[in-house]
Length: 359
Image 1 (spheres, rainbow, N blue to C red):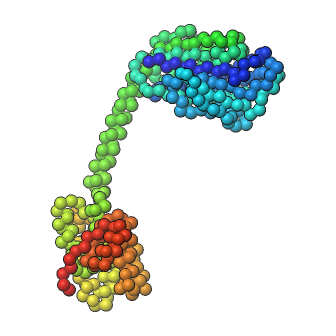
Image 2 (cartoon, one colour):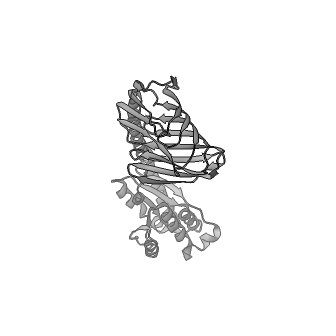
């Protein structure tokens, strides 16, 4: 694979007597083939015209993922467009650099390409030397991916060393003539250890996700909305819930979520010696026995109504609380009340109307 780090800078205006440039550049290549370039430029205008902008070209094969250009006062404005086989980036200085003045700025660019394994060939063309301005000095540090092995380098770097398990090549050039384009060709072998770690991590991730899904489904019992049964008071007092739940539980996992509002209404009826209250409470006992047999899961949810709300139960206040809970839980409301069923259906909530037995 050829990783052509071709970055060409050139002036936006081409009439200068002399512009001196000093550059410090760090090029870091990671194992994903992402190239990070950080360049600090000291530019001195020894000419007769002010300098207001600069331009950078990057081959299209590199997908630019990040651009930052800034000086000591903050970010500089830039414009990116495509010209031929290059992506052109033009930026403007905060104010024109007048003759005799020196200006320092930094360019940070990240580019990426598809990962390619095996032997890699890196061609690094110097960032600045295709410009028509002379470069007094150019220092470059090239950091290869962690754990890679260098096969060959041309030309030989001034210095090479290892930093945090990464091979670093250091080059230093002086008095680079305009339009010259020296380059470095590096052939290196990517570390197979990293790839095996990546593959192992991928397999482990898939296994953990699968195990997590299994655990949630088996032990936490995540229920589809149609399997969440929310009975109202009418379904409980008519003793219609237990048979419906038993029939469903024989085929699939069922969660019975009893509204506390319905329980409060049953308790209120029972305290008034109303037979319906006792029937409803007996139905809850049967549901608990079914839950103890691990055939269904039984929980109680929602807000318990106050005394005044219970007194006004006949006006539909408790039914409205049950509908609200069914809508919030996205469950199936179970009722024997036709009016409740009609309103629930109109509100867009799933509802099952059971035929009540004569009381």
